[in-house]
Amino acid sequence: MLRIFSQKTTEQVSDEALLAQYVSEGSARHLGLLYERYMGMVYGVCLKILKDPGKAEDAVMGIYEELTVKVKDHKIEAFRGWLYVLSRNYCLMEYRKHNRKPTYYQAPENMEKFDAIEEAFEFELPQKSLPVQECIDKLNEIQKKCVLWFYYEDKSYKDIADTLKEELGKVRSYIQNGKRNLRLCLERS
Image (tube, rainbow, N blue to C red; front, side, top):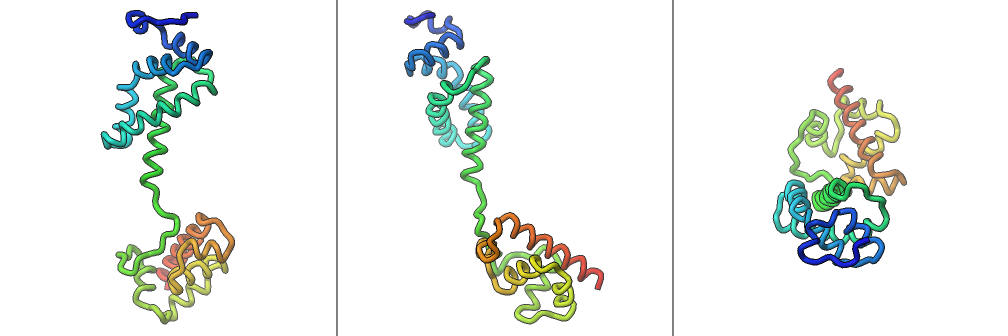
């Protein structure tokens, strides 16, 4: 195995040799030389996903830090392809982390209404009209509670989830399904 690489020969040394050298000795120099070969590719992947040169540069450095740990934990047969996948996954996680929607969403008062049931709720608060009340009564118990709490008592998804001791996603589903069932019921009335 090659132990010392001169300036001239580093370009001729294979990815596998540099990788093996890093894994066996833990020398950051070898991994740095290897990463330098593909830094342009990594930056391109990051820029394409993050769409911001500053964030892409930060991601290139973050990927290197992650690389120092993950290289030792994985059996890598084709470094370039493996690095591409690692870079893409890292950037996708960064993108999702910074573009995540809050889970404690509560509908703002002046939100534009998109379907008939929300318009009915807006115009019929605090009283419920007879057709709306009849349709609410036809909902299953959990949907009825969630819809009433969300629209009539202005509780957030999180508040409802805590009250019911349910997952947030299930509460969203109950409200969405309840709205759909109410809309269908109102359309039949």
